[in-house]
Length: 324
Image (cartoon, rainbow, N blue to C red; front, top):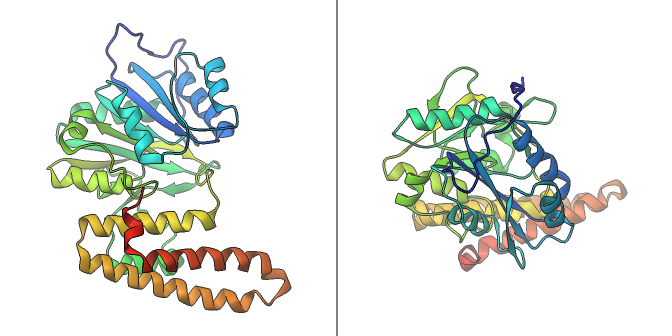
């Protein structure tokens, strides 16, 4: 169940003369439909901690900037000429803020004060924690995602073939209803990071255009001695996948996985991952080629064929994982 926020007359928004407990960074790219209610939820929540908000716009053409200026004058906008990617834009927002804690927040989310305040309070009381997050919920309040382990090749096989989710609903995400625990990594849809930890390990790696950057950051945090925690009672509604369709997203997700393995697991495991993902995509390519002959499947098959072909090309071109 979604945790409801208590009614308060005035949110704890800091002015320019005050220090911030919390800096909230959102990246937008033609997502005004979701950005507006997201900002509404932030400013209407009644947060107990002083906060500022920065929106980094990646060249939107849907009027997002005008909407923010008119409806949320306290929000600072950093304007990019084009889509520079999620990690680079997030870094711009982090660098432009000074809060002791930085909240990386997707623009297709709805937040509540008890959960955000709980995340801030947890970092304040847990000095070894470099980052913390909670449960992501679907708009109907059902479970969407919790925490994940840093993957193995077996886990990537179960994810890519969808065998994992056939056995364990929501796989590879895990959640605990009552237990606060140390975990591998959490989605940056709503991830609170200690600025001192970022200062130590560095910003998000901008070689990740989108996907994989948050896992890489949390991997580096833990290698530097910081802990990452999961708070099951802290909840955020996340619509998810609103910036691109599933077929375009597949290549970007796989690119992030390959780059993570290349950077953190070494060339042997990275090569094995490429071989596995390429082989599975080739098998899917053959299957969808047959499905394309059926009139009712032609449009879906066309998209699947194009998407899996893009993945195969990516697997055959290692240099692609080093491109921004």
